[in-house]
Amino acid sequence: MSEPIAKGAEYFATAIESPANSQTESILRPMRFEDFVGQEKTLERLKIMSGAARKRNEPLNHVLLSGPPGLGKTTLSFILGSEMQSDVRVTSGPVIEKASDLAGLLTNLQEGDILFIDEIHRLPKTVEEYLYSAMEDYRIDIMIDQGPNARSVRLNIPKFTLVGATTRSGLLTAPLRSRFTLQTRLDYYNPVQLLSIVKRSCQLLEVPIDEEGGTEIANRSRGTPRIANNLVYFVRDYAEEKGDGSINRSMARQALELLEIDERGLDEMDKRILRTIAETHRGGPVGLSTIGVAVGEEINTLEEVHEPYLIQNGFLQRTPQGRKITPKGYGAIGLAAPEGPQQGDLL
Image 1 (tube, helix red, strand yellow):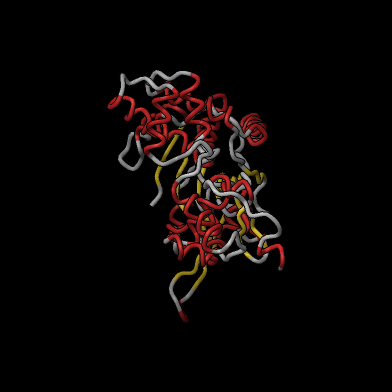
Image 2: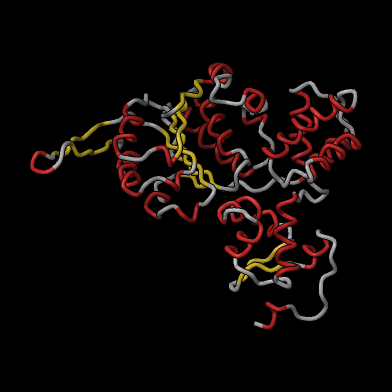
């Protein structure tokens, strides 16, 4: 259920071409700290930890990476594997359903290996408790058989590094969180950083792009490198079909308008959310479940995909009574904000 990823950069470059990975996406993954753009504080912390561990010839201490999806948590785990010259095994919280699954993963590790668990907050509680002794004492106690024949067996495991990634750090239990030496959060990227990522991606894909074309893509990428790279792929395809293959501002704008992504990075679902609050509920406040029913989308998707960007950029407010649209949100959907106090202001 796990997937070996890296022993240094050479092995990683081969492993990413497996069917389990998107080859084009993996081509764009940085494999060194020097190639990773943004997240300066997190990079500095990881460089210090990995450099000191190499000097002591010890495994890296456990690391917890949190933040919205698409910002580079998985990529950083690969870079750590390359920097430490260690194998990286990748799995996810929902995949590890019982203690025996975790025991199989841990006992197959070698000294200094990195175990990367994505969405670690979704680990079952019973499995999570086995991680405590594994992270601290490098051993696990598992129960064999049931009833009168039940007995506990202690398994010693090699010293390893656990790199956990989560989009919802608040769901992690305090005992698990406290066992990570480094807890660091990744934040959204600014347009300048995204422009650098877009240029690098186009260079690797051998796609000609000018400054204005790259800026157009960067500004509509919602502060997320994964979205920026996805837009680069589509704009490249559009430029090859509709033009000469090079990307300029006009070509990028036409392609992104076809995807219904406006200058602010808002897509059609974002605007449906704002229109529902503005027109149907007079600007709010309104509950997230009501919005989900109105726009035909799951609550988790609204909360984890759309809402963070809308709130961070001032289109939406989260209040104890529910969600409210801001004057900037009204402008994004072509409406004038009502004068005087809104419905939620009177509560």
